[in-house]
Length: 373
Image (tube, rainbow, N blue to C red):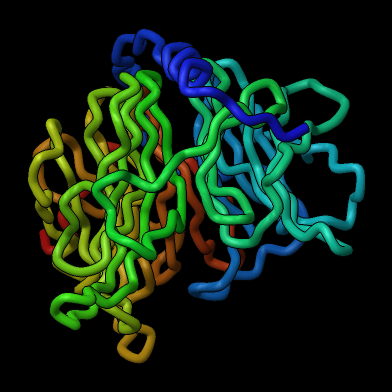
């Protein structure tokens, strides 16, 4: 059931979002650096820039991982794959995020008039919990350890759900211009800071200037008003934020795969900087950052018409250089979408037989290397 909230009610929700961040968890000194291939089901085809058939999208506690396998929403315990129990087994989808208590948020791509919709699922439950007012198409979503889920709703604004109910909508920042709309909500941390993107596309009547672009948006967990952050050089695609409020993502310069890694550092007063990419690839993205250890991961890319090398998963530890993660097979594409404080990186990689496999790089910072060395 859709619920509206008063300003006081919204403040209560914000206060509930704020929880203490846990301590950093270092990688086990005795662990073995390797690429762990997880169990999979169904289709293992790989087509660049198309919907992923396999992959790890987030990492949870005690060896839990979530993502997609055979275009179905799944989770893994260790290397064992488990389907999320959808009422219609023919629906496709993926699990996008999981919190420290095993609560997942995912999307089920629809059949019939409803179309795709978001759901939550707790490990061991008999069924998913559909989220109201979440029907749409292009989704990202996240969940924090207090159980608050964030995403964009089908009719435009961002929203917050708790225990299967929508509890708050996320407004356009008051400093945004007219015709500004929320186009994506991508992350939430345990302080309750919520991250997303807004798109402006309008003409200034006084000057006739046409303003167009994609900007980062922050809804602070302390209850202060939402604000637009200073953008990167072109369109700013913010993907994730850590417990300190550090943001990672990428700058996008247009239709030619011109991606550039980007980091916004607290207190988020500047336009951020790019730490670069791999020497072997001209373009790169950041897709995720660890909660407290400042490890960012993503994918290095080429323009599709100049594909000298396949995509490759990358990693940046703290303020150091961007490095490559090993491929599963020589010449096989790879991509990284998740990273934990325990130095595990989740993603996907093509094996020697051309199959896309869901993988986890263990002791990932020890495996990272400079491709030019």
